[in-house]
Amino acid sequence: AMPSGTTTTYVKLSQQLGDVKAIRDVANANGKNPLWIVIPCHRVIGSDGSLTGYAGGLHRKQWLLEHESPYKQQTLF
Image 1: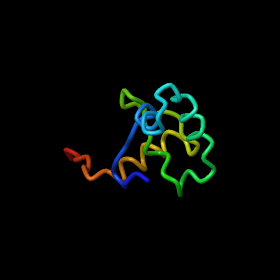
Image 2 (image 1 turned 90 degrees about the vertical axis):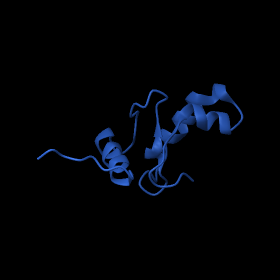
Image 3 (image 1 turned 30 degrees about the vertical axis):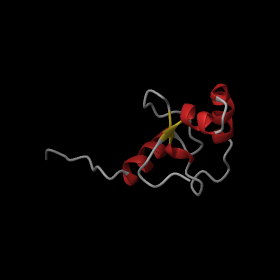
């Protein structure tokens, strides 16, 4: 499990599983997670930092990541 406020990439997950070429399989398994709000698949992002597919929608993925972030966005006004 990944701690709240942290992220990983599909590449790193496939490396941890011992097969760097399994990126597509890791992404497919992550995308089929039926418990996306309980099992934190929203913490998996693209290698370039992009928000990639999420069963709950990318707007929810972004909200969850911002909500968990130890760094809060400051506003000017």
